[in-house]
Length: 165
Image (cartoon, rainbow, N blue to C red; front, side, top):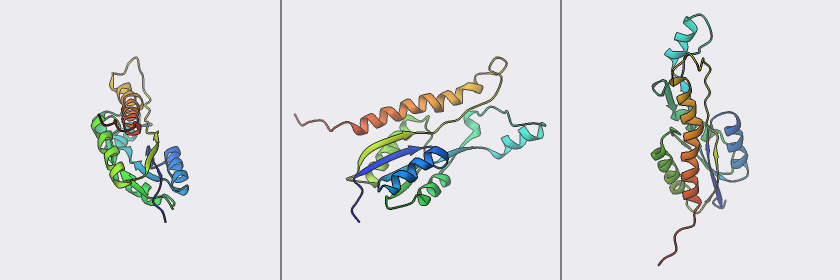
């Protein structure tokens, strides 16, 4: 089989829409890097349930865990013929994006990065008026700042190399 000509990076690729995108690309023969998911720490869920209702505890940065195993499992589950790899990435981390893009290029040499799906996202429920900034800071950091960081790195990766002087 020929090496893939096109490649993609998919954040939020271990479940839902991101997983469906990764599956479609892999079936079409693309090389795909999928990013693992975040999950609430068990203690946070248990505290919310013990309080007698749904868990409305705001997710702070310290309560979010990357799940690298989810990324590896998602990559392994993608249907071929395209090769796939998992990546652990905190989408709020600009430097992390740099490492993921570099590892992707190294893993799939010769495959042009043709698509980046910035699909990772979180949401919170809570009282914006009575709550504090942590109620909305994490969703903004993930859903806005993380997308901006991803777009910046995607644009750099897609730019043609500079011409020699």
